[in-house]
Length: 140
Picture 1 (cartoon, rainbow, N blue to C red):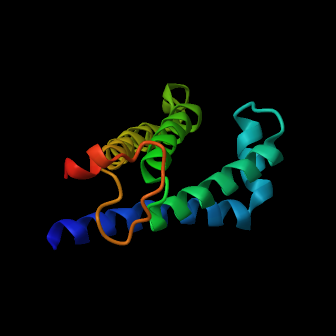
Picture 2 (picture 1 turned 135 degrees about the vertical axis):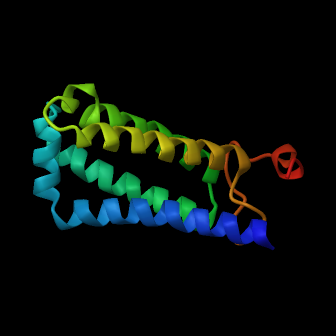
């Protein structure tokens, strides 16, 4: 029972983090686009929308358990990309807090990788995906 609760809470935390990120993007799409443009990316408004929609897809995967491992892996790549682009070494000299933000992304990465390997748990999880196998389910 404790394992099930821990997994469900972790899934809710993952979903909550990405839901907040998406809601901030939707609430201030122009500001998000400006932030993306400041990092030097082309088509910042388009990329802001892509990021928001991607984050909504992650929320759905974490809440339902469908394509959970795939979502966790994609989220891991996304989180590390964000760490380097928006909080990486080039930002540290101007603001030491950026180093803390950068490191925080790695703790999130660790959780996402752990989740990707262990899957969505046995309860309240749609078992759909490309990575999810019977072998992975029996390893639990």
